[in-house]
Structures are given as structure tokens and as C-alpha cells.
Image (tube, rainbow, N blue to C red; front, top):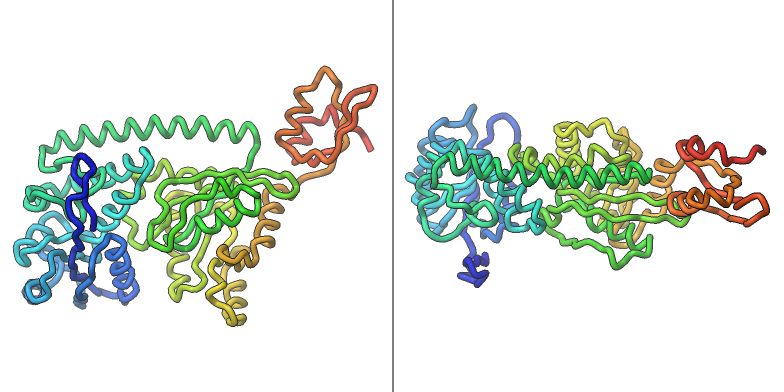
Length: 433
């Protein structure tokens, strides 16, 4: 793990050595623990071992039972671990008690996810949102964090924009939270202005949603390539939370239909509520979209679970009623498994498509259905635009698909594809059949 000082100079190249701990009450948590290991690796942490305890309910003081705490302390000493990561949120008291018992840093799944977000956020708004989430999480846990926050140096859960000397008093933290909320509100107002312009121009919006690392950014880049906009490609990596900052790109189809494609932050199971609240302003873009592309990693064994998590988050932000298409990506990893692909196509209530953003399989069909859903109500109209209404002709050229135009004695004769709304707006210029 690379850490930097105030002058952005490298301090050390350190890999944290961690033991993962989970509590199984009623449901099997093997998948959740596997994902926790992937999250730890995404935070540059070496996973040394894993402990799972079966209990009817968690211990209020130490999360796991007393005997397991002793066993965990012994594991830390024998394996020379410096960090323990728990699969659920811990209270401040639990963190304090566990650190005293084990002698190492103790963090939970929420801190781990926030740490990854802190390391990956690049835009000013993204950093503000992560810092707000960190503060919201830590404020009620100041007592438990007292020991950890008094340490010098870095570590998981202390880096990024959230490292603001949180051992200072509660009022300082609350003031900082108020300042961040004011800054985010200002940025939200700017986004609302941009959204109003889109609505006025009647440019539809398509939002990519889905589990982290499902291939949303790769899908966006494939659509951009098909639109001959290779210079507008977004960053993509085969890793968790590669995209944290919302990206927007204009896509123009062969028929000159234009829509805005939005790439959003990926979801994950047990996504911290503080993070959902902090990113609410960004996630609002999903609520204003005309169509959602729910991207699912077709090659992943637990794809149905990941799809259900995404649907649950959409419900949390009030976007569960939005029209959407289920896009099973990475079918190139299912080559030769025709029966598996056939199962995917009939497995959901929504319209489904199997694609490979990497190879381009199925992308033409996907773009066709996007066109039909966004522009399917279009009609071909013949219009006569008087010369003193030249602005109307310019507007038609900018916002509609003009098939032809001819300069006549009476004005400009235009043949264009119009939406139902456009047909109503320009009805005085439409010629009768």
C-alpha cells in the first residue's frame, strides 16, 4: 500500500496483513466473506486467514464470543497480522474492546469500503461525498475510535479526504459536515441546471447501473466506439469500484438520434447507508433517467445475488419503477455454453440481452432496442418552414433527424423524424398528406 505525506511524497510501500472475521446467524455467509476478501485485496491488503463463527446473535461487547476473541488474538500473534476486518458494522465500543483484546487495528466492512472510495475518488464532488460518508460513520463512534485515531501514521480507514484529525471535538466534525453538505448542495444546483437544459433540449438519458465490476464502463466505451467517439472513452479496469465519479457522454446513433449515457458507481452487498446517503445527489441522476441498463456479470456464479442487490439499492433510491433492460455482460467468458445463455435470456421479468462489451457480441441488438425504447414513437413528417422562421429550421437540425431539406418559393421544405412531443410543438408547420 502506497501512502503519501502532505507534499505528496511517498512515505512507504506497505502491505497490510489482515484476518477476516464473519458471524453466521441464519444465512450462509460464504459468498459475503469471499467478497470481503476481494474488497480487502482492492485496498492493497494481504488476507492471511479467515474466521467464521456461528451464533444466534452477535455479542454486544465484542461482536463474536469471548472464546473466539481469544482465538483471534492468538491467530493475530501467530500470523503476524496487523489488521482484523469484520464483515459487519461494529459499534465504537466493539472496536475499542476488540483492539484492546487483539492488540491490532480493527476495522469493519463499512470502513473498508469507505477507504477504497477515499483512495479512488478523483473529482471534487466525489471526494466531498466520501468525506461526508466517513464523517457520518465516525461521528457516533468517536469513543471507540479514540485509541485508533490517536496513533500516528496511516492505515486502512484513515487515508483519503476523510483524514481530518477526527480526534478533535464533535462540534468541529459537525461543522465540517455542514460545510460539505453546503458544497454538495451547490454542486447539486449546478447539476439541476444542466439537467434542465437537457429536458429543454429533449435529449433522453440512459443510466448504466449494476454491481461493481460488472462491466458498466466497458459497455459505455463500446457504445462510444460504435458512435465513433473513441476520444471520449472512460477509464475501465477489472477491479472493484473502478468507477466512483459519474461520467456522462453523448451517444449519436446511425439515425442521428442522440441520447446521454451515464455511468454510475457500482453497488455491492451491505453497501453502507452512510455512503448511499452521501452519494444521494449523484445517484439522483438514475431517478431522472428515461431508461436504465442494469448490467450483470453473466460469467459470475453469484450473478442472481448481485442482480438482487442492485435491485434493492434502486428501491432505496426510489428508482425501482424505472423502465430498464437487463444486460448480461461478459458472455465471451461463457463461450460454448449456449444452454447457460438461453437460461439468462428467460430468467428475469425485464427485457434481457446477452452481450460482450469486450468483443462486441450482441451490441448492435442492444443499441437497436435502446433506439426503439427512446425514439419508438417517432413519425416521419413533411414540413414547410418560412424563411423568417429560420431559427425553427436550425432547431430541427440540432434536435431531430432531418432526412432531407429543399429550398422553395414558400420556404424550406423539410422531411424529418419527429417524436410525438416534437410533432405537437411544430404542428403549424406540418403539411397535410
